[in-house]
Image (cartoon, rainbow, N blue to C red; front, side, top):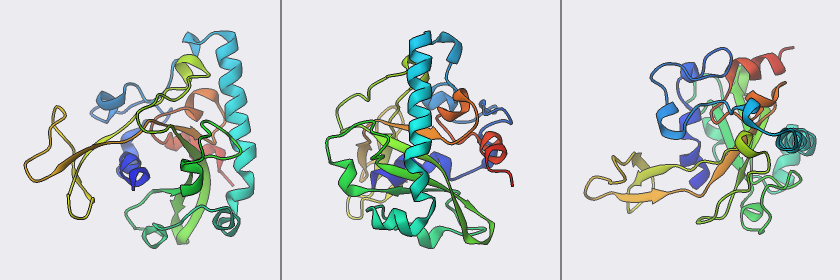
Length: 212
């Protein structure tokens, strides 16, 4: 599924972002630009709209902190068998297939994907949402430079559609199929505007927001 491939960069080394959420040397910054947006570059109106989206996203998703409620709403925990301490998925992306095709974009009451932190003891903590735009369209930048969308390229096995690698300069090895996702944007449930719109999980900020 696209959400799994799109989120692959979140599942690996927790050192991918530094303590303040900025990029560590040698991380994926080259693919999508800096991890944190430039809040200072936004106008007052853009900051206000980004903050409104952030707060509405947190409030709208609160009901799905309970995974049974999320399942009842149509979110599919099909990667749940990968959750738990020591398992490969650090941030579990849980899509709602119906909402991915409902024609509503950037609606805090109907996010296309929930993001849970996979912690010790099989504990899943809701830490964000991921909005997606229809393939071939651009997501609305309601918060100007704060609300940055991005996409992902991958190389797929033509038989299974499983991700087997990443293209080099847009080209996959022979026998693999190139695939580009639609645009997406995460909103993280942190305590400040910059880390809330980080492209990759702002680990220190998420730890602080979920302390206790």
